Structures are given as C-alpha cells and as structure tokens.
Length: 109
Image 1 (cartoon, one colour):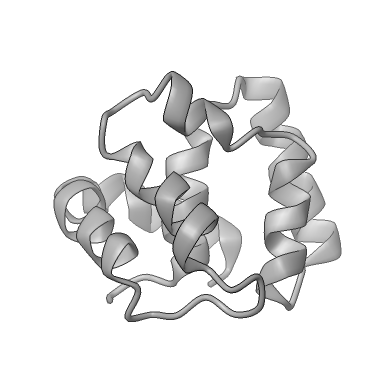
Image 2: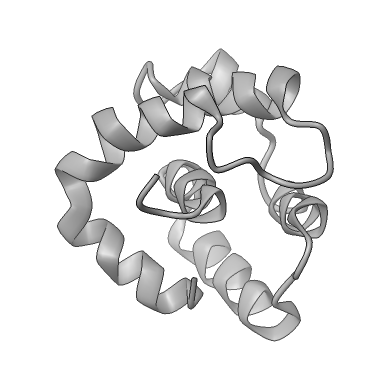
C-alpha cells in the first residue's frame, strides 16, 4: 500500500460529509491527532455513520471500506495488507492520486 489505511478510510468518508462537517472533522483531527486507530475511528464515528456506506453508497466500492471495518478489522490496529483496503486504494485512490496528495498533506500522514 502506498497510503496509510487512515488516509484511505478518511478519503472514502469525506465524500459523504458536507463542508461544515468536513471542516469540523479536520479541525478535530488536527487538535486531537489520535495516535491509535481505534481512537481515529471513534473520532470519525462522531460525525459519520458507516452504515451509510452500505445503505446509500456514493460509489459501489465504498462497501469495501464498510466491510473491512465491520468484518476484517480487529478494533486495534489497521493492517497495511488488508485486502479490501488495498483493492480500494488500487481501484479508487490511485486514479485520483492528485486529489489524494492534498489530503495526505492536510492529515500529516
């Protein structure tokens, strides 16, 4: 994987957030800078319900993020070799890498 699992997950989630919520999440990430993956997901869950990725996906591949968090993630540490995240990165993130680079700079990861 070229990008961290946090970047990939946040990129997928950001498509669902309105501008005000996106700004709040970015501000909260910047202030709290959660070191643990579980804390990062908890912070995101304060502003976003991951079930939206299953029920009303923006793109059908978003279900991969939902499935990873629901079934594959052990609630501890993200694995860089997670099959669904690798697939999402390859098919969604890499084609839009130019935009994703800006997120990487903002998130500082």
